[in-house]
Length: 409
Image 1 (cartoon, helix red, strand yellow):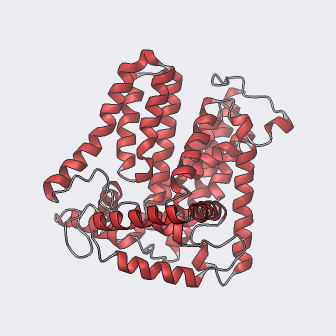
Image 2 (image 1 turned 30 degrees about the horizontal axis):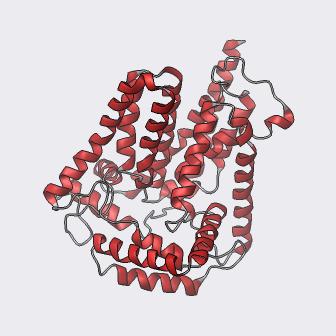
Image 3 (image 1 turned 90 degrees about the vertical axis):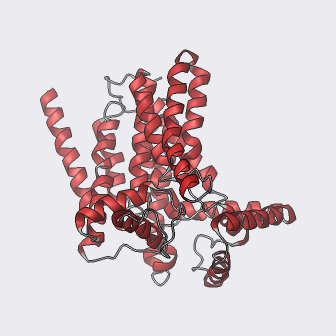
């Protein structure tokens, strides 16, 4: 019986991986370039690393404009593939698609096999995430790293071994240098761990020390090369904060706001005249002044932007403006996934893994809300939504939990 279950699980794992990968190789197969507005800065830094010039911007100057992990990743793949973007697209698709069987096998000790497959299947066919492994952006690799970090804390909660703390500390330090918004995740996790497991204080301190090593190395580089103490990237969040409080995001069924986007684009051109540090300072002050002048309007716009960013599909605002029915269909699918995940929260909360997944999602929702939230910023947590989906409607159908589960509290 055990062999039968194992063989079945293995076949399902392969099926999930093949399905996820097949969907994410469609765009590379038809020659999609993968370059969008943010891509040139990543590519210029990657090219500089290959040629030995270092992290350089498109103008050829040394920079810390982008966090270093993704340019390093790009440089490695481009060097091997002869500079072909399709090599990056394929590797990103493989890495991201591997999460499908990982999610499935991660869920097996927690829920029935059908439920584990259901959650992983939603992840594999999720239309919001399919195009983004083909883009030169950090989100696909960020999703993989965040889920690995999530798994590391799951192991810490079960064993508390020092090696798990070391791995989590190193991984989180590297993660921040790819996905900057995660910079408070590890400190918050360590603080909570210290509150409830004070006997592990030495391991927690060790984890924190290892966590800051990658950040320290990057900061030293920036101080030595650029003369500035930049811990992650030189571009601050001031402009994004200003944009959220000034740009009126479209409601759910409204057409794309071309006038608002034009005003935003014009201001962005003005902002580029300043250095990243100056831009952050100037627009942060503008954002604070705007909030003081009209706090209710600013809160309304932040809430509206956040709602839109969760419901709309990444990239749909511009590319699908002329195809309202397709855009509406994708929104319906996206909202359905969100509702399924939400329905799984009560049952997921019975497990440490479920509480942690929900906590990370809340973290992203809270910290991205005021910083010009666009749908693609939430792509790194789509795997965690799939985890919650596997717990959906459990109270209604009352399934028997896997008897091998030791994490039910």
